[in-house]
Length: 102
Image 1: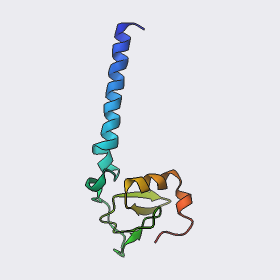
Image 2: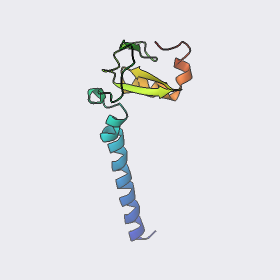
Image 3: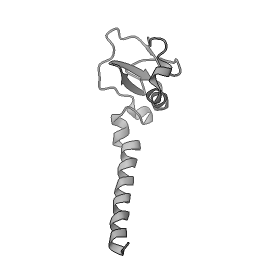
Image 4: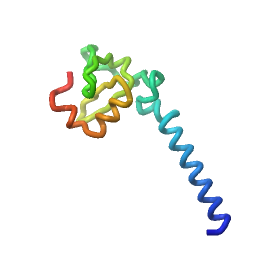
């Protein structure tokens, strides 16, 4: 490889890494419901009954308006106490949905 090709490859890797970091920890994390307490605002409407939901992963009672993360599976929205619980759920939703979420 010549020097110009290596420079182009390095530039591409640098911009790709920056894009990854911004989507994982920056603005993209806010859009996906993560990023700690900064991602707690929900843009969607809470359930009609307005009651607490259960995190299907850890079982913690969650107020949908204060949930740290949410995920939609099979047309139903599930709320989570943390982005880590949401990530575990999204890797294997059937494992956590053996009983209906309330």
